[in-house]
Image 1 (cartoon, rainbow over the protein chains, first blue to last red):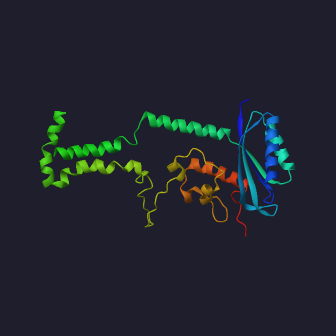
Image 2 (image 1 turned 90 degrees about the vertical axis):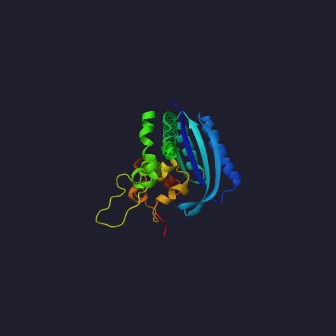
Image 3 (image 1 turned 90 degrees about the horizontal axis):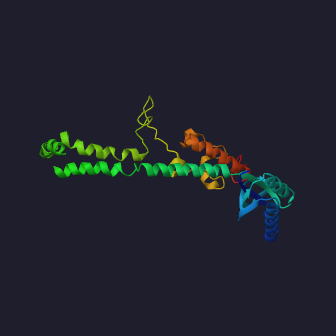
Length: 138
Length: 124
């Protein structure tokens, strides 16, 4: 099975001490590697105001992770762990590889088109310049 | 080439005396040149004036201008202008977004809503 890429975001309670958050991140990473996945990137976005109240809290500590895996069970296991982790109030996993693939494809397509015919820049100066030539001859 | 230049030469001296005839020649392509770059405002729907007297400005898809191939749900600040104050997603006819980008945009907005980056409905 081909490798899939996921975005994993979870929100902790705003009053969680930093070491606890690091501990959750460590357990998530450990669980991912154990199941054959790989955490490529971890970003702590820090305390942010949430758009709506979650469990009567207005703020949350956002953590973003990039996960690569060939098995879907990794996601299942990570979500189970996040669900039982006390400080985590919300989490979301999104599969992104197909959209990134689409993005790549569109980008390549655009570059190919730009290389084939540099229309955008070429005729625009050419037309006024020919007009200038005519004016210069006169 | 010599044939082409020969007919052009005779009207050229006449051009300063009678600008209405010949000056439109070089001026014409010059004026039409930049037009395709300007987002084709003269296309269909441009100068269409019905019973109503006001002219509607042609809206251009913001994502097409940026040539974006992917709308990131994580950047709530670029999605926020496409929401109404109460949190509804604005329709295409209001924002001018093209069909393809609107499709991506709604998906991005819904993802952002799920992780509390954007509201489902504004709180009162």
